[in-house]
Length: 351
Image (cartoon, rainbow, N blue to C red; front, side, top):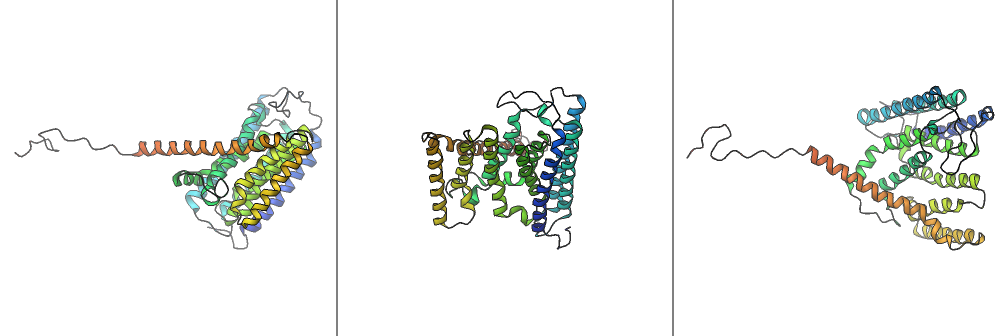
């Protein structure tokens, strides 16, 4: 059952983007209330700064209970849509409206939880788990889109249909985990880095809430979500390490994935694609030339694409092994042969 035609998914997408900006602004406005909280000194790249020096049972429970409730609710909605709705429409299903409301409610709950208890999940888990969840999301997108846009310059990698089909069917559970987990990992702080990340997470939550609608599969919208990681990674790198830091690795690494893979699914003419590739190469040489380190222009920009493409291969193999194992378990055992000289009923054979 769907909502009235006027409740179009495209309109909901626009309103969702606006609401994401509004919620991000709310976190920024309320952020000044958190400035008096004392935190431990920064201890390096693997240290997450925004967590209480002396957490309590209640600070931990508030974060983990809120996260678990949010995650289970979102997963249930995805399962309900896949098993009860099961068809794409131009408008919103009622379950989409519920999903948007549920996500908005839990975002508000986490903001409140931050101001009452402060800590997110970061108190108990590694910073790399949050970063890794988003990387895994991007890798699964590359895998799912392999047959449509290819993996290297428009040419698909030899990944089986069953593997891609499995990723397409179950990706919603993984993507919702990546967005919800990363959102609850951080307290609702108002720093520039947090705000950029929260806005990106809110867009992913909107995308996840629009399952089984045409808006969910709009190519330019899905590409925007992929491409925003380049903006987010670059800006955070500049904020944390300054203009002389490692931001070119993130900028040109993610843009390298765009040139090698993503732009080939946008329907761009071949001359335009060649032009974008030339602009990319020129920008790499210009930036690293101004930094006086042309040698790094060869090594740094390939790190992120290399990691992502290797992970695509690893993930494809793991899914294939899982599917093969499941098929072997489900395969019925062959019937045992009858004993020599006896019929199936146990009597003597006719001679």
